[in-house]
Length: 230
Image 1 (cartoon, rainbow, N blue to C red):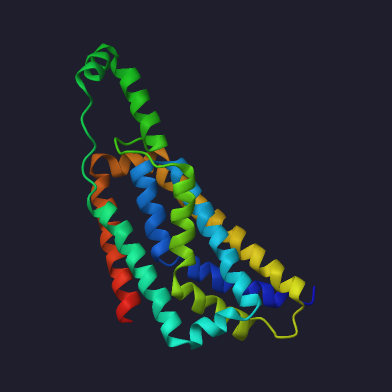
Image 2 (tube, helix red, strand yellow; image 1 turned 135 degrees about the vertical axis):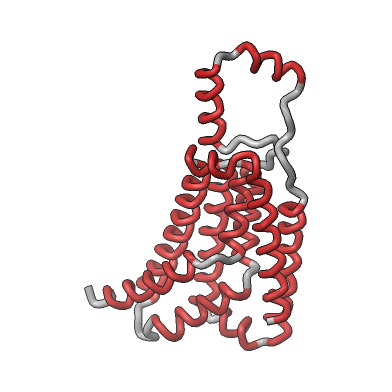
């Protein structure tokens, strides 16, 4: 395969980039802790779809225009920072799960210890928390906007399509690279969502998981500041 070395280079660079903590990582962890595995997976799918957006404008050369037009790049940066701060606000407001209501407590008292342990493990595995749920569509948009508005992603794909991918590489091959990057990104964050909701991880987080949620909020604030200042 004539483009195998090029593909392997892209895959390696992408692996390093996607595994590094950033807005995508923070928002997937936050949604996994706050809303559970299902919502985190939809968020991950949204992130993967946003990769196609970056690939699309990179293929037609718009990434160069964005990166070399100061006011346009700044606009992207401010929009992304504002959105990250909005997400951080929700994360920083998180608190301990609410205790069960009186009726639930009476039912719980009737369940023997073995059933209690089984139910606790089931809840931990599914990362059920007493937070208001959001729709799958909203989770998808959160993931899409978090990645799609990130100017760092614009620079990443600009570098990818100018420094690594040869100018003579056929358009169909470049498109194939882009589809791979979108799928690989979505799968990576889906795996992260699953990992965070497994029983052992969920039990480790336990009742103090809201502190990790708040930590993700602080990380989002830091990332927003970096976008504006750096």
